[in-house]
Image (cartoon, rainbow, N blue to C red; front, side):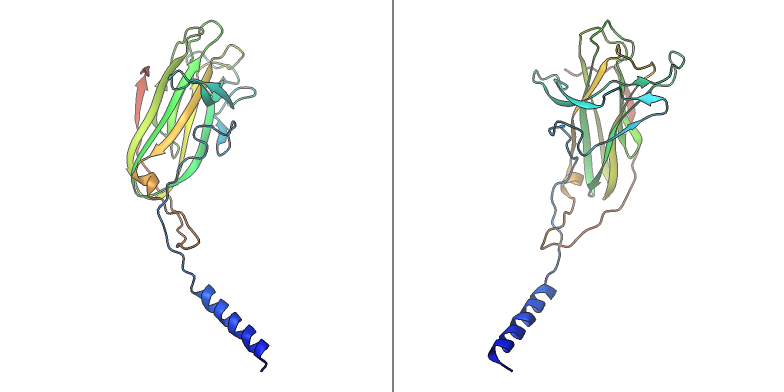
Length: 232
């Protein structure tokens, strides 16, 4: 065997040994919502849905600059103009839609929060918007703006706290009104959709030197209804 051939075989064997020695192990990295602040200027990462006989508005949802958290500074917010498609009896079932996305979480405490607002620019409206925070399709917090005066923005927030096990969960928001949607309908805003807590920080994300971890699915509990709690 020539010296060149022996060198090639030696290098090949060394490469095989090196490759077989690669082991994937886990490391904890933060995970969370994609585009929770709508900083991309669109709804990247989110899926839009509508209820039966509901609409999120012609040309909606979309991202607009609005001071949704009432801190005096406008920022990108998801905007909706929800309501019924076909007229139902006044005071009937609220209709509309919203957005959601799936997130992978670890074991531990979970805090969800989101800022919400509504603005009517016409002449006042009895349906400012009913906002529902959703966790795996279940309402865990609500807020009904009820009547809103013209050109007076109103603000609030939704939140939820729980202790969960590792899994893939669906997080979202649903906005509805018991009236038809038209050009007089107020615009509803959502911003700063955030997840925090040990369940977020405990998610295992695979790296080139880490073990690949697959996520399961779990469940959780329901929440409470809050009526017209104003945010300062």
